[in-house]
Length: 131
Image 1 (cartoon, rainbow, N blue to C red):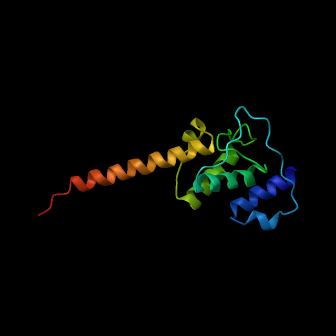
Image 2 (cartoon, rainbow, N blue to C red):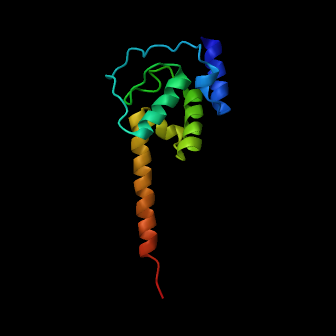
Image 3 (cartoon, rainbow, N blue to C red):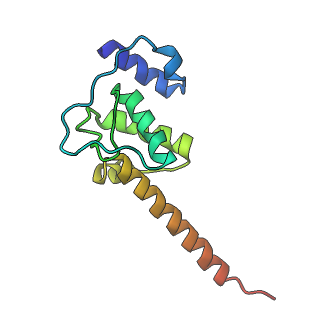
């Protein structure tokens, strides 16, 4: 329901455990998607999947499902990106999210970001002159 969705969004913003707050809310089934359902392959994908399921009130979200096909919008995307920044210490812009609006796309961006940081750290160490 719309009221439950607004309450869930409000509680998400406050970082409250939704599983204890809204046990009686019935989740919607996964809508017809343009891709087959695929389970998470990593802990990070699973963590993001759980967040999407709570935010979008859907009982099953695949890692290749498009956030917007699932009923997400730009406001919910901002809420989700803010939660990821806090919980996963990963800052993804809305612009970048629009390019790959899937759980797998987010995790790929996270891995690419880690690789760049690692390379930059390695380059910094090479440029240090030891005396």
